[in-house]
Figure 1: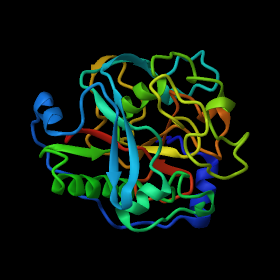
Figure 2: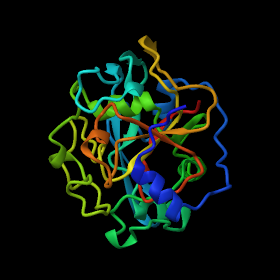
Figure 3: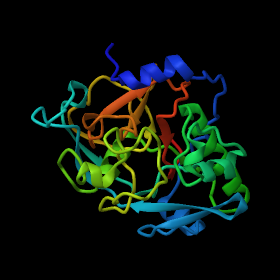
Figure 4: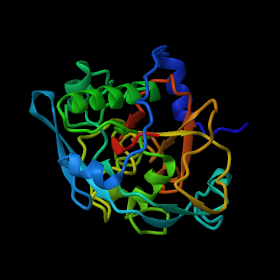
Length: 287
């Protein structure tokens, strides 16, 4: 199977990757009434929210209204890959919250007690990297437990990674082109990054108020990777039940423009750590 692994990713993995063996437990699924949930939270549907992490570190969450969009790219799009086809009409039936930025080094350290980042000199406001998919899920699980213990989350609601469909819907923010703005205006990529990450929120946001959806670090999604989009019309897709690779989205500081498009789908082994990989927090009912 052809996996869209970037040449730079492969070189970095050979040189510096540490393979992790830990697994993050995922919260047990439970049916949750949306109105009961938002009543129990300090969260209100339609409004953004700020989580206060340990040591008074803030993490801003943006409300994403449900809707329908076209996932994937047309073959006519410059840089389009075959694994972004066929275009698929996706309906997101439930709103959710998504991190205003990728999780930063300071936010990760506040929850996990360590900072694994290679680019630590970029500062605590730079995105955390050198995190595997399992590391990202462990962060989500630990934050969920902390917030539940503090009475901020009802049972059955959890911090997690966005699905691939949620991620693209949020990235596009109503746009239909290759990107939600001019690449240099919205992203740190190989053409302007100086081969390093940068503090989050310095580039222009999309129409939903989300920063760095493209560039800086590639972002883990919850889905197992699948070779093609399903096509047709689908509702709240979550990807296949199993696989070998987890989805990464958004492109990173070391990527060419082709990989920094709203539809571009990448994947890698969930154990891998690299300075290319980060993540963005979502809040949604447990699956």
